[in-house]
Image 1 (tube, one colour):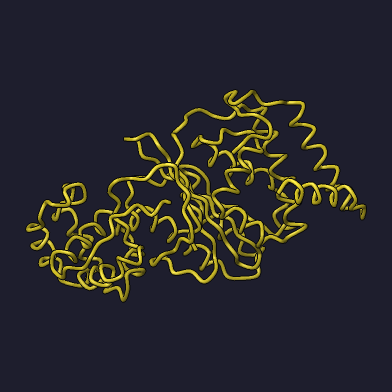
Image 2: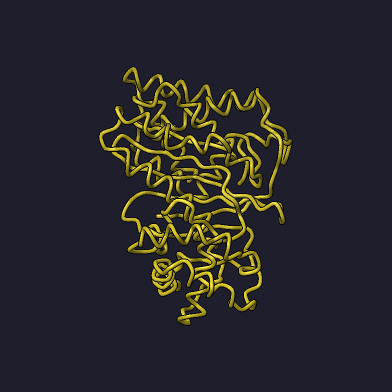
Length: 351
C-alpha cells in the first residue's frame, strides 16, 4: 500500500562530511537494533510511515522541514548497512538522480541473496514511481527513488518529487502487501501543503475514468487524436499542454498492446502524465465520467540540525549516542542483553 506523503521546502547543498559520517554510523545502529528486536519486515513498516521517517531524520541531525532530509537519510541508511545486508536480511537500491535509474539493476544484482524471484520487486519499483509521476499529477516530478526489500520479498519505497514553481518537495511512501497499484494505494497521507488542482487517477472516485481511459487507449490513434482536437478548455491547467500530434506515437503503442486494465495501461513504456491526462479528459468529454481533482495529500530534534537550527549539532552528544547504541549491540551479540533491554525500556517510557 501507499502509506503517505510529506511536503518539504526545497533545500540545496550537502550535509557536511563529518556529519554524514556520523549519520551513517547511527543509521546502521538504529537499523540493527530494530531488525534484531522486531525483524526486517517491521523495519520496512516503520520506513513506510512518513512521521517515523521524518523523526528518524531529526534523530540523525537533519532539518525537520528540509527536502534534503529524504535524500540524505536514504543515503545514510544505504551506505550505513553496506557490507551487512546479507546478515540483516535488508537490501537497499536506488537513490537520487542517476542512482534512482539504477534501481532495477541493483535489485537484480541481489537475486542470489534473496529467497524469492526479483521480477515482482523490479515491477513494484517501476510501478510505484510511475503511479506517483503519471497517475497522481500533483506537479511534483520524481527525482529520488529508494527501494528497500528483504530476503522474503517484502518491500518499501521512499521517493521524492520536486515542484520548482513553488519550491517544495513531496515525499511518497509505499509498503508491500495486499496492494492495488491503481486504486487507493495509500492508507494515509501527511502533508504541509495541498495543491489546488491535482488529477488523481488512483482515487476511488476515478474508477470509471480509469476504465474508460483504458477503453479509449485501445482505439485507433487517428480517432483519438481527432477527439483531442475538440477538447474544451475548461480544465485549462490540464489540457493546455496536450499536443495530439506528439501523443500519436504513444497511442499507436497503446492500440497495439491493447491493455486489459488501467494498471497495464500505465505500465506501457512511454505512457506518461500527458498521455494519461489526455485519456482522462477524453473519458470525461465522451462518457461523462467524473474525474477527481482533489489533492490526495492529507520533529523535533535529538542532536540539532545541520544548518544550525534550532541549534547546531552537538558533536559530543551525537558521538555519545552512537557509542551507547554500538555498545548495546556488541553486548547483545556476546549474549549480554542488559544494555539493549535498557534501551527498549527507555523507548517505552518515551513513547
